[in-house]
Length: 457
Image 1 (cartoon, rainbow, N blue to C red):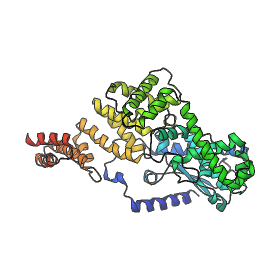
Image 2 (image 1 turned 180 degrees about the vertical axis):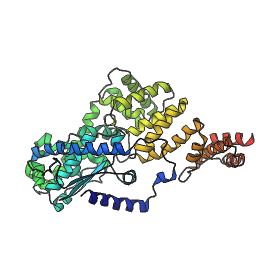
Image 3 (image 1 turned 120 degrees about the horizontal axis):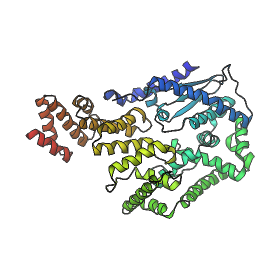
Image 4 (image 1 turned 90 degrees about the horizontal axis):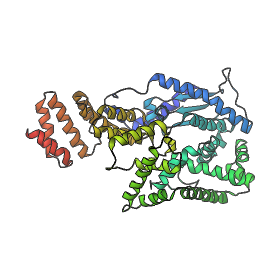
């Protein structure tokens, strides 16, 4: 069973890799390991411990039992924790497949980094496994994506984990963040709207238990909704969207006046600076308290502060603030990604010249934050700059050689650094050639001037 899951993963990975080169192959090995075989083995053990607990709750609710083996684990269920190469080709944190034989796949990185909660994710996947096990392949396959994901989020009380990210995305003006109805294009970001549909059925009609019981018996989701609530498909879809829109409007009205004004100003380029000042004020006010506020206003101030470059804030003070965010606030509570806080700290430590600390945070992103590939790849520049600050010239040489995909302005910077490395290693001809090239480029004025100065010495 485990072998079957691994074969499925390998087929997917090989298909992906045939079209996408693994970007890390262009770089040296990580500055230091943070994801070890021991940690992954321990994670797998935790997952296997949580599954029977999650399953027991579903069996109590719906009455259908999944037979256990002599160890108390569900029969014909496999768990696979992905390797780094497999995880690179994997979208999301986990997924479940199969019907008679069910398999769960877990990307270990979001859990090992602390970005997402293990228990709720395992219980979420257990909902998928339970429904797959007790429905025929055909009936489960016909169940719409919104119903699969919305029921899983709803049943494991995961809505609060999805809410703050969804609200931040809505109010920060992120593209494709608006509600698009249950039958619109679906992505990982739509789980919030999916779950609100079940919240609507529960709040207005107390119908969720009945609907999902009928679905488990093989009933079409819209037939089950009509039987349990009296709502025909088109009416349900319309009312569920209206409920979600009203929910967001109510959450907006629950904010204090200053936060609402800042959100409005954020969407106006001419007023965004005022919004930035207000979000930073609320962030600094909240972070100064002995017990951090649990309010949505404070959570939003954390998320928006990560998008603000504040020239008025003391960098050492900000480091203290964001270190506290990392230690005391799970990322699900402020709606942004853990990698954003790490990236902010990496930049702040670079600015004050603490290069070991900047290297630490950029390496954590490089090693672990696979769910944010843009930041994970951008962290390589932070690693290089940290090595420059540490004057570790062999490492500078290794990390500056990869130029594929870089903007020319970054190439100028990288070649200047490589020139410094060769110069320090006594290879003056190679150094002068690189300085000359960077000096002749007009793509990066700052490093052009540095290169010209080095070339003319």
